[in-house]
Length: 137
Image (cartoon, rainbow, N blue to C red; front, side):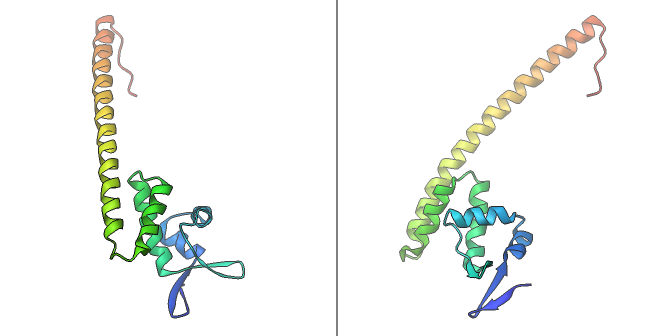
């Protein structure tokens, strides 16, 4: 259950884990890398709305192939005071770079799939020629 602290709804580490499908270790790691800044009540971590927004961006960035350092730079740019213009431009540039890399990887994978299928067709033909039955793999 989220708690109210200083007029701001906070979440415990367990609530964050359940909500965002991450482990406590992941949250502590992001905190150690200064990507998240939970409030502390003794040994208890309380994550603010800002932490939750940052975590969503971290997880999205990781899914898109951004490094943690790239993500940190983008998150840090948010506080520059230009209505997010610099952050948006940098994010767009990084996204374009990662998209090109992902498309190249996809193309390489597609080529490898086609080559493997071709080899399997050759193997099936050879097995048929030799009277060997295909296994039901």
